[in-house]
Each structure stands twice: as C-alpha cells, then as structure tokens.
Image (cartoon, rainbow over all chains, first blue to last red; front, side, top):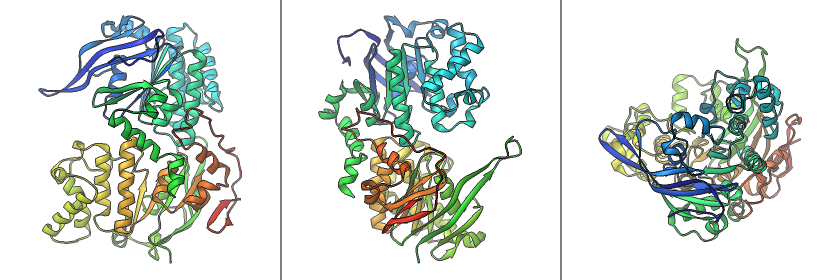
Length: 277
Length: 290
C-alpha cells in the first residue's frame, strides 16, 4: 500500500522498506514493507504507539541507523535519488541542506560543549558558505522567528543553561538553518508542558509554511498531528496499517489501533473532562 | 486534622561556587496547602515551576529551606532515620522515569517485595502471595514476576513501580509525572488503573503532572503552580469552568481538543515579571493569587 495525499509531486518516497536488527543470531524485524510518500510542501503525520517503528523509519530515511541494523529491502527516493545507495559524502551534502531532522530528546541531541550559536551556525557555514559572523547573525534571526527571547544572549549560552522549551527551539533552529526542503520532526514536543507544546507546534508550522518545507511529523500525540498534518499514516508493530487525509482518519478510522489512539486522545480532551467531572 | 499539611514551604537553591552570578533560585516559595483523608490533589504547572521540588521536599529527598510539613499529624521535618522509615510505609512515591526508578539487577518480584522486607511485614510465604496479589492488582501477568525490568515496556514498568509503592498499603501516594514517559494509549490505561486503585485501596494521591486533564480525572482538587508559587487552588470542576489566574487560563486554553485542533492558537502565558501576591479565597474552596 502506498500512502499518498494527492497527485502532487512527491519529494520523498519510501517503497517496500524492511529493516531488521540482529540480537545475537536472532533476526528481529523492525519495519516490514513500509511505503509512504511525502508531497512537496505538505505535512505528513506519522503516528503510532511507542515501539511501533516510527523512529526507526525516520532514522532509516536519514541513513542514521546504527551498525546492528540491516535494511533488507526497499528504496528511499529523495527527488528520485535512492538514499539507500548514496555514499557518505553524498549524505553529508544532503543533511541539513536538503533533509533535516529534529531529534526526540533536545538535551542529548545538542552538543554540551558548544554554545548554541555555534551549533545553529555550523550548518550555514558548512552548506551556505557563510562566515562565522554571518552565520551567527542569521542564527539570531532564526531564534527570533521561533519567539526565543533575548536571542543574542542565547547564542552565547550552552545547552544546560536553557530551559526545555528553549532547547527544543534551538534544535529546530539548527534543523532549519540550512534551509532544507524536508524536515523530519520526531516527537518535537512530547517532553514539554502543554503551553510550550502549543507554542512550538505553532512556530514549527509557521516556519514550514514560510519556507515551503515539507514536514514529516512523528508523534503519538494525535491532537498535535491533527493540528499540523494534511495527511496521516498510522504504524503498528513495524507496518503501516492505515493512511489517509487527517479529517478522514479522525472521523472514520478503520484499523483498531487507530481507533485505540483516537479514543485515548479523546479521553484526554477538554470536552471529555467537562462531561465527567 | 488533614492527612497532609504543608505550611509556608520554601526551597532555595543558591548558585554553586562555579556560578558567576551567585544567583539564588526560589524553586518553591511560600507554598501552603492541605490534603484531607481520602482526597486527592493534583499539582499542575509548566516545566520548571517547582512541582518536582515540592514533591521531593515532602518525601524528604530534599531538605526544605524553611516551612513545615505535617503528615498524619506528625511533623515530617523533625523525624530522624528510623522514624522517617516507618513513616514512608504510609507515604510512598512513583517517579517520572520508569527506566531509572527500577533497579535493573533485581527481578520484578524482588522489586515489589523489597518494601515488605524493609518494613518487616509477613513471612516469606505471605510476602510472595502479597506480591502476586499486587501484580494482579496492577494488571500484570504473574509470568513476569521473575523477569528483570528491561524485559518490560515503559507502561509495564510504571505498573511495577506502582505495585512497589502500594504493597505496604500506604495512605498517600506521591506520583511525580507518572504518565510523562508513556504514549497516549499507555497513559490512558495507567490513569484508568490509578483511578480504580484510588477507590479500591482508599489512597490519597498527590498527583504531579503538566497534564491538567489527567489531574482532573484523578483528583478532586487541583493546585496550579507557577514560578515556584501556588497561583490557584480549586475543585477540578471549578478550575475548568471558571479559572481566575492568567496562567491557569493559558494552561486550560492549551488543553488539546481533537475536534478544534486544526485552529491551533498559542495561548499567551502571562508576563513572567507579574508580581504574585498571597492566595485569597475568591469563592468557597477556590483560592487564587492576588
């Protein structure tokens, strides 16, 4: 099954991807025949419970899987180029400039020994030929776009000096710095309180719209996905079990894991609580 | 007398010798509240608002700078080693991270049994059947008893932590973000379990969370914390229907609703420099910071 939103040009296509991991002699399948399409300029939501293979899929697309993982079949096409056959120098050219990723845990994804300005600026120095000063200038503008207060001060600070929300924004800024065409955001808001969550989702959406970035948003947080995505893919134990336009999935889910996720999300919603207390 | 009474609790963190500014952080500032027998209180607020510090002070995992804490009419802060241990039979905790809160070298059965051994309850046979009973109660299969924590999912580990906390029959359970590490479906089933255990075992929860909906489902009353202080305390329904403090309003506006999720609007949190006054009673049982 190929999950597709519209007839528009896909910028990223995954076809029949299977990934295994070896535990000793044991072969454990993590992804089985996964196919999806990310349409240019659209947002694709990838939802599922923990352990369903969402992050493995993201890391496969980024070619960041550890040595113990084996991609047994499939192809990942970025504008027609198969990323699974790309050399490491070709991947270096793509990372940050064409495909970026916001990782799940901002604290471990940032380098504790470099200040924020260096980490955001690095991408621009590497890919856009900026000088250090230009890169820092643009890093400050990016933080400003993401509503970080005192951006100049933040650039000189280290990750441990920032709050969770600021770290998450710094990581998004670093991912956006190279003006990529695709952004993969893996649970970008789950560690945050609800007010910070909504702020960051808003900023993420605005940035992607403004820069015409195609977004792959990975989350188990259904309301967040509903808010941002055009199209949703649901994963369960390494396979895609359902896909469709957001409104369609919300109103008429077919697979039982999808129903389960929606039911849980509804029980944590405001209307549910007002009806019961 | 209330089950738990906290009076004017303060915890300051002063900068270490390495910090240039010598800044003092008021993590918890003049917090007072009561939890009645059989009642549960939810503490909600943004990350960094002092919720966890408050919980750790009550558990005496941190020494408060000043203030008083009474649990079952005893002054918790004056208790020494042995007395404190005895008290902990009645006051238990479940922590946020189910990966670091269980000893990886102990089997599930040993983890749940350990409090019984510490408090010298029952003989080995009675302890074993109590552990099995707890396993059933939290919805785990008894086949898992001899497994190590790594063999369980995050949701199952949180159930083991819950079984360990409840095995001695405490009167109060302090749960610090027990749902934060779980996906929505596991959150839902763990919360439903806690709602049931609360009624069956007549436990008072001090439920700390940034999810105001989960707090409202488990607790009769909710306290909203912001920048180290309580800014609003009210019965759950009152808090949802007539919130008074600007931070509470922002927090409630941020609660997701599936149907309206498309029109995502960021709530404006109040200005951080807003001066916080003492709590006053706006209507019976509804307290808000001036």
